[in-house]
Amino acid sequence: MNLEGQLRSLLNQLSQDSSVATFAQNLLYTKPIFVNFRPDIENAFLAKRTLEFSLIFRIASFLWLTLYLVILSGSYYHFPEIFKDKAYIIWQSAFLSAGIVIFASCICCFITKTHAFIHQYIVAPAITLLLYQLLVGSVAHADNESGLYASSLSTTIFVSL
Image 1 (cartoon, helix red, strand yellow):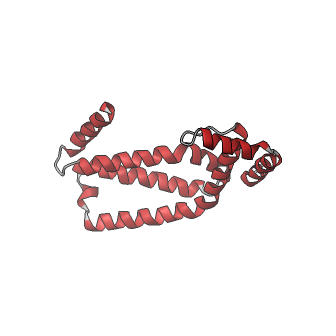
Image 2 (cartoon, helix red, strand yellow; image 1 turned 30 degrees about the vertical axis):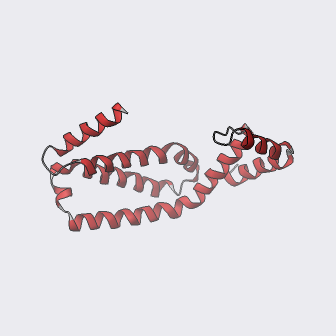
Image 3 (cartoon, rainbow, N blue to C red; image 1 turned 45 degrees about the vertical axis):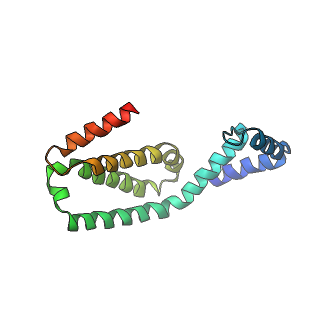
């Protein structure tokens, strides 16, 4: 069954259950910050989120690719030393890992069976890795030791937290 059919089935089951509205109101009244839904409501929510991700994934992956190529070409034009000098290994790895993730997403956007897996297990770690690399790159200094210094400094900061 495809995602849309699965979502319709779950929503039909929930619409026939008269206790859903009362359950949601009581839950929000008793626990307004930390909410734990019933498994049937949670499954319907996850199915809806996965369907929405699947619907925008094809368009978004090519927009990400366009943005990546614009940033890559602008960076190469204005800062060619980033791509040629070994002192900028952090920025080189950030461009490489972002490129791999974006090109892989452009390929996977046509394979509908992978959308749920990518949505649940790939997106958050990939974004976290990229943000970590950008953080390390922003702390690094432009000398020959910057890659090692910034990497050990940020690792020390994150481990101590």
